[in-house]
Amino acid sequence: MARVLVVGAGLSGLAAAMQASVRGHHVVVLEKRPTIGGRASSEPRDGFPIGYGPHFLLKKGPLHQLVRKVSKVKPSVLPLRPHRIELLDSGMMQPRKPMMEAALYRRAVKAHDSEHPAIQSSDYFASWGLNNEARSRALLNSNLLVLKEGWSGLVGRLAVTLDEVGIPIETGANVVKIEKHKVHLADGRHIETDVILLACGYGQAKKLIPSLPDVSFVTASTIDVALDATPLGERHGILDMESSMAIFDLKQIHPGIAPSGALLSAIRFGNERAEDRLTALREFMDERAPGWKRHILHEREQKNVKVAPQSMRVPCDYSRKAGVLLTGAWVESAHILSDGAVEASRQAAEYIGKMPLQQ
Ligand SMILES: Cc1cc2nc3c(=O)[nH]c(=O)nc-3n(C[C@H](O)[C@H](O)[C@H](O)COP(=O)(O)OP(=O)(O)OC[C@H]3O[C@@H](n4cnc5c(N)ncnc54)[C@H](O)[C@@H]3O)c2cc1C
Image (cartoon, rainbow, N blue to C red; front, side):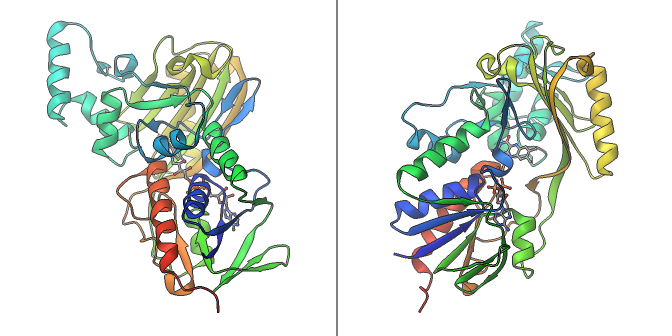
């Protein structure tokens, strides 16, 4: 049995702590913020779970499976429906009429024909610019899900399970330096351990281990708003392929997510200045969700956020000689996004048994 310090209580850290504990290790989680969840959290405001940009769960992906395994009550989920997603300039993603267009769509989905606008858009937007075919097929087959409880519900379910098995999560514990078998906190304490499992996101991990290889990311700006109006009507979303922008109404996708009105989550990708990206997204919303500004109940903007790694990812045992394992969506695995994070956490937990214990 090894003593494991997990740095970061986002989805990766919580999943890694659970996987390490299942393998019999003694685990403690350190989180620098006062709250857990990292990028996967959503904040409840008057019954609206305001998130950090649109998040869709892959049905039966590693995260969905993990959450189902630890939950006594299954999470309530409903899918994005292609016939309710509008593609700017080419109509609905899945046309139902005329018959000819509907038949062409069905044929394109079957062959995954990347010349068809619906397939092009799902290739791009289902995996946020990563063109991941599995997630694209999931969107086209109504297998990308919205959670009634928001993403903080997932975090809550994992945290409850950790609590039940007695794994402590210390919040307000900012790790500022690591050495072999030792972490240093901003408050002057240091903690000895056998294995350090970094689950703190790539930017923070690179600060703690400057020799990590460079990883480039898809970046975006996001706007999440609760409204007392429904400017998208019955549409689940509007996608603009040319300008890499999308607006979703999570309330239309899962009516149970909010008491009334709309819960819009909008995103724009690109490498321009963050201010310009955000301005373009606001203009897109003015045009496509008319009047939204007059109906805002709650709002959250992110000017510049790393969504997913777009270059080579790093192996979880890259720093094993320093007694450190890595996890997150930027760590190598067969999956991407949160599913990648959960899968990388499983691999890292499996690796702990091969690491040397402190003498
Ligand atoms: C806009 C957007 C849309 C996305 N959409 C999807 C989607 O549709 N589907 C999907 O599956 N995934 C999606 N993702 C990806 C998903 O949010 C992340 O992969 C997932 O949240 C896993 O994050 P993590 O735990 O690795 O990192 P984070 O959530 O960043 O957590 C890292 C944690 O470590 C803590 N920490 C950092 N430094 C320290 C330190 N020095 N000491 C202690 N603690 C520290 C942080 O406070 C944080 O809590 C999306 C991401 C974004 C940004």
